[in-house]
Length: 230
Figure (cartoon, rainbow, N blue to C red):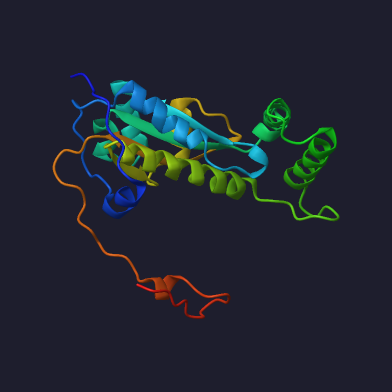
């Protein structure tokens, strides 16, 4: 079956109508042009100091998806969906070329000068390279740091897939060690989430409702009611 290019839906419609997809039609492929657009959306997500620590393993081979299913709590949709994106975060990419390359790109685009770039390099190295107990700073949890960045890009990928008319299923149920072993992911890289993309088979999960604004959003201080017009 040949995939056809899809028309984009408005983001407001996508956010309102998206539901997690329990099962996918394995015979309904994702158009390669659409897949490129979906991934490109994620690569354009915002990133602190433009370090872009996300990495995406795009799993399309049926045998590989079957093996991945076993590492993902045997969820059928991992094997059914024609595309499963394994979203990862590289904790050490910043010191293995990403920082230098990001600054070089900034220079090529006329963003900042040598002095500004030197400050950025000092700040990034001082923060991400600091050790627990070191003077003058707080050592970051690099696992948490990459998770924050990756989830922004991951969600952007999901919204773009939905906007192009595909169905998606974000997944956090998997054994990280097994996924890393299967996909030969380096030790310094965290597996953050999986995203199945395709066309649903059967119905999406029903709408489960959402808590109201006043329960989850506060005005200026925790617990202070936020009043907005309906």
